Structure formats: structure tokens, C-alpha cells
Length: 204
Image (cartoon, rainbow, N blue to C red; front, side):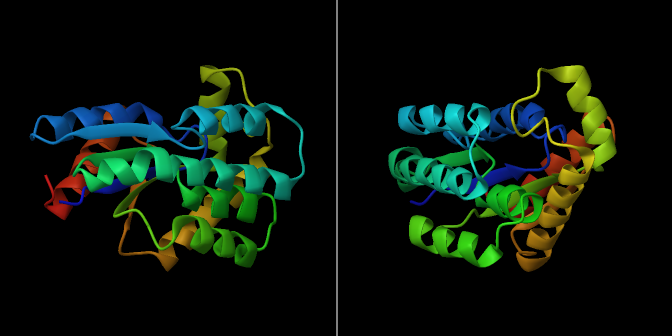
């Protein structure tokens, strides 16, 4: 039996992380094993690489390579074994974030990212991507009220506008697996959209 791979995407402050545990509980209540994980991260090595990416100054290509190194270890050590035993994997970010952040946000060519995507993932893509879409200005207000910013969250509003556009482009390219969530509403309104996205697949 093969499990389901579901990714949560969106710019920082869009609210995705606050709903991932709720969806995990929703799926568990229907009798399925659920693994909740994140990127960069998810394994001891990938978590160490995450700390470097979020804190250490580096150029954009170095950043991209570290993210994909973490992703490969995450796939091999966590995601693929969980899917092989039939678990549902809910992952806070995956490769769409690389196209949005290092690609659209920082200006790296999509072809470079795509080459790493094919090499590292060997064709494995999410079965469903839940995209929490929010204007950059609104996301900035939420981030300011929530936490101390990391190296990404310190970027200006224009950067996050480009990242949002990168997600939109990725959603158009992969329309079958993407579901857009209007993240401007209340938590209850957003949650109803998340449940609707899950229910339409008929997996659980």
C-alpha cells in the first residue's frame, strides 16, 4: 500500500503551519497513520542544515544546494519510508518553496531548480499541495505580530510579493495537485477550505 504525500505551501505568515496539525488529527480520526514533518528539516541532518539556511549568510546558489541536500536526506530517511508503509505524510513546504523563494524571490533560473528537482526527487511529487495564498502586505503584518524574524522573514514586502507570484506560477503549472486556499479569512474560514480540499480527494 502506498501512502499519500500532502504538502503545505505559502509565504511566511500565510497561516499554513497553524493548520497542519489540525489536518493531521482529522486524518488520524479516519483511521490513518500520519507523519507531520517540515522542510528544510525532518531528519537530524536536515534539521542541522535548516539552522544553517535560516541563520548563516550565504549566496543564493549555496542556499539552494543546502535546501536540496536537506530534501534528499528527508526523502530517503523520512518521507519515502513512511509512504511505503501506507502512512499519510503532511509536509510543511517542499520543492514548490524552492521555485518560489530561491527562484521567483531571489532570481535563480527555474531550469537550475528543475534539474535538482529531477535529480534529487527521482520523479516523486506530492499527491496534493495545499497553497495558502495571502497578499504580501497582510502576511507582513501577521509576521510582525508573531515572532522574531529569521533570515527569510527579514526580507522586504517586494520579495514576498515575488514569492507569492512564484507560487501562483507553480500552481498554474501543476493545477491538478494544487488547491488554493484564500488565507485572508478567519482561522475557521481557512480551516473549512482545508477540509474541503482534503475531502475532494476521497483518500480518507
